[in-house]
Image 1 (tube, one colour):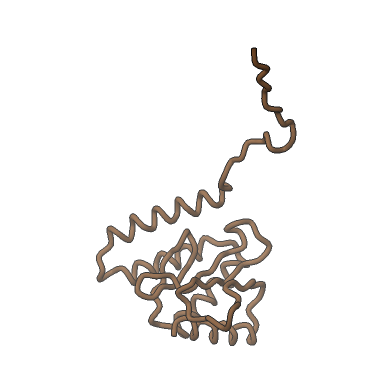
Image 2 (tube, one colour):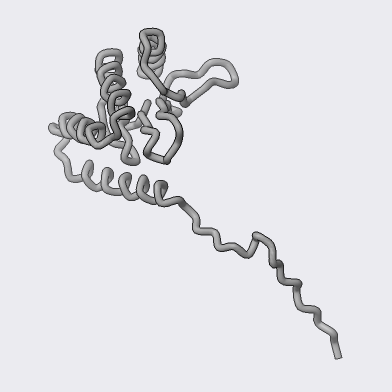
Length: 158
């Protein structure tokens, strides 16, 4: 006769159910799936114009503070790097080279954060030594901030 022991049951926080992704993360993934389907249906001739209108429509949906930042950032990117194509990326305004996202704007409301961000993907040419920033918090666009963004966008698109 063997005395098999039963494993002890934990009553701590480990028993709480893990729900996985937040509602905002799930919404972003759903946005991305819609974007992929829409881009697959588009004609290569109209893709750039469609991307521009999608980005402008997404910016128009933003809360006032984020919308003002996004509109100005869109103007900056379009003038500093006209070869980058506007497109939506996980429901965010983004700018791509050869279909690959180089930079993007994430509104504060997107993931309920306290500030908007300007982010760069690994496709951006921002490498500087062994460590460099890839995301910048934006609270206001001053002349100095805009100059820095122009510099970053130019280098990223390079």
